[in-house]
Length: 479
Image (cartoon, rainbow, N blue to C red; front, top):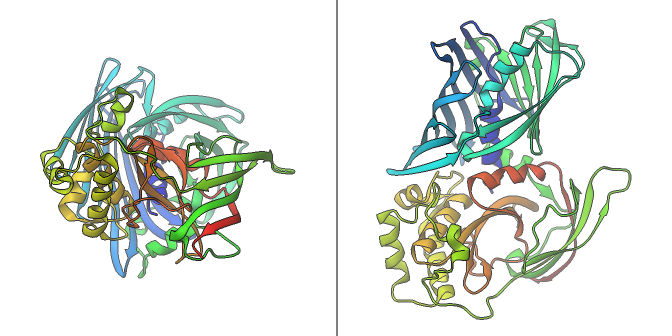
């Protein structure tokens, strides 16, 4: 349930542009969500002999099960004179869990080193010479001297998602906004990454005063004293989850027993953005009357494997789903050893996957805090749905079973609607959805897949968060 919130926070934390001032600059911002303060950010920009350096830090605080917890990032970027990255470091931390990225650009390649839970992963990514770091876009805009109607396209690299996307930028009509007791003249600048859209308010000389993002996130320029002060009570993480809730008029009974579900999903940007597979299919779609959105009638069924295959699976079609990754480090000796202990001599791929599913469900404590990798989860044995899913995927791959992570929504009895969630799928002759968080060897039909893949797939969730509505037209089982 935390995956969508994590994705949104990750992109929000890196989407705040640096102060667009070529002189030494040091700016503090406070971060609000629906009017409540949850954190602050600080960014410094300096000249270097090769171009520029941007240093940043962000801290957010939430109350998790009665205890104050924090999510923080710190990053340093070194850019050339044209604002392209030369090298960078990026660290994100939640509780005692942290992940550290170090990147060096060599020609048209980015050499990445990722450290998490004592595991070190090295990765090489194609890196076009015209790529930017998201935090550098503010510098670019300040250099151009903003004018109404200007439009730009930049390819930006998003470090915590290990993905690059095209950012579109459009300068709107000049206006005035209240800021620190006076009216300031600003240009609203709309920045879009896929369906994630922010509006940043820049002064004519390029100073960022305010940024508004989805789900009620607002970042506002303040002084240092104001930035680092927090209210006596921080926002509850369950309150944060509620902002992403997709409510139902009528609650579902015994959702874990539902084997077939018919849904009407509204507010979609297109008729084919929800994945079709053997488990779920779009029955029909239509343009919503008077709107630029689509409504899709979706049919979801539980899917049992007709016949399982033996492991290890060596089919070249599943090269990605069998490979170790930054999140699911299936080649780590600790993962390999634990996988072998769980599976034992079981050769049937489905029964082996079910063993892994039950072990993760029974041994990983459910907490509203996720780790950053499978190795960390194996060490701490705690976390939310993403931790369960990533550990499952790593253990399954280590056992020679193709596995992939899925992002989507699932029905929550506690909240009376659908929340964003993560679960794995395994190939055992056919793709089968399991849920180690809920302990389901066959995921119930309230699991609706919206995207598949690891870090970079989280961007796809922005097509849905805060935009869709759901009506259940039929449900079978669960009575």
